[in-house]
Length: 153
Image 1 (tube, helix red, strand yellow):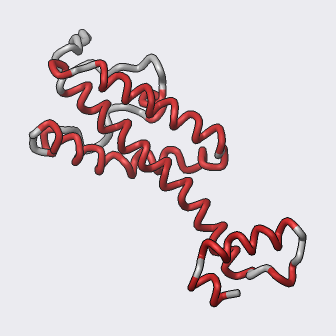
Image 2 (cartoon, rainbow, N blue to C red; image 1 turned 120 degrees about the horizontal axis):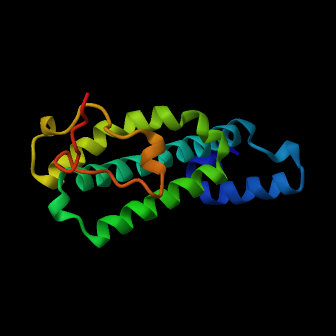
């Protein structure tokens, strides 16, 4: 089985699925099946990370470039929020990694946003100015720093 796994992954996968459906334990390539299942889980976590990068990038642009806000930015933010919500519904085990992936995604989102806005990364906060709950909330639209009203003591 390992030779087929290395030479023709597609055929190996079809054969393994067939053996699993027939409950033919002797035909299963256990080590490689376990590796592939683990890989599928990692891919789901990587998708969570990737979607957070996109969401944070657009939220940063929304907040720090209010004069450039557009319908397409709003649509992108809405679509990414819905995709994240669906991904988490379909993979509830990922919720334990939500905060870590959100925090890990921010530096990439910050770098991407800075490039798109043609500004230095230093002009953006070192850590996310939004919480994960805010970023995921359908009704959260960050104000620009100029829009923020000072609070009195």
